[in-house]
Length: 271
Image (cartoon, rainbow, N blue to C red):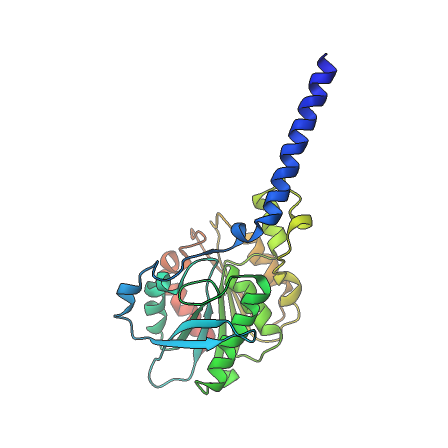
């Protein structure tokens, strides 16, 4: 009787586990992307920002939207690829602080975010970043030697991929994971994440192939992407490179906790 009961329990838990794995695989995008579509966000405040609305198409025809903030007297431009949640209107405070260091900032929403059309995916985000880069080159007439790629969290993986096949003055990667399966195993240790994930974002393998100056930024109290990921990316990157750790910073407050020193670090890197 006891043996049969144990067998039933084992079968039951096996079925539940299998369903959970299957469900996670089918709903993978829901575990990765958390977009806010317009009008969700802080668009009413954004009307006061010194930004230009930019619309452009990805190579597969998806219409995208971004903001170009022009700091008069410079061509140095930061192409900002944000994280997996919200939209560009959530980044306006950070945007204004970046402008104070005397650079242009071009921040875009991926497909499915903000005013951009479509639905997010790994290959889709790569296309979106490429379209933004091409927009700077051909519409804004900005030279690759004046473009710095800046990716935060998921955006760091997108920026690293963009740097593989495009010239740029430098690459800034902040709070970024080594790969999606790596971070997935840490967040869901009871699931065979590597087997069921289609999306890879394998930044660790890619960053070793990049030969432009690299700045890796990470908070040592990051509760989502542990600082060890940043260390591994730094170790794999080619020279010249720098690893900047912000003491006490979590995943989403690096620029707040880092304060003046954080922005001075970015300014020194682009100068």
